[in-house]
Length: 169
Image (cartoon, rainbow, N blue to C red; front, top):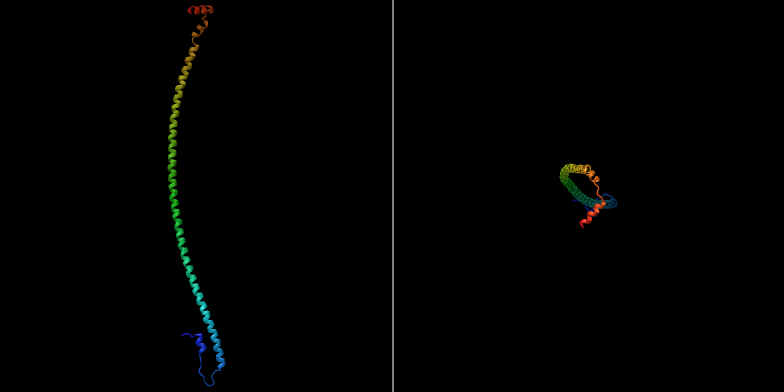
């Protein structure tokens, strides 16, 4: 069992003839007592400090574990976001390709319809041109006919015309 300061203080030595000087022994014991008390106090402080340090280490270990878990969760969340983004981008690309195909097909279909309409208009313009040409040729034939010359040669006396109209009345 370890000595306490009280044990050192209360220690009494037996007397012997020609023994040690009692004052020197008492002085030495007083010095040992003070040093021993100081050591005990220092030991208590070191134990308290050690306990606080252990508590801090435990606290920091807990924080470290929490941070590691948080990092893992953040990494998993980032991976989930990345995977979801990839899926979403693929869906967007597919949708865009479908829309592009639809637009191209509609444009091709419209181009075909327009092409058919153009061919139809060309045929109609040929028919119109031929008919118009025939009409102009027919009118030209009328203008060039000899009947016009006969009309110009035909003379009616104005008096005869006036007399003929009066008779009709």
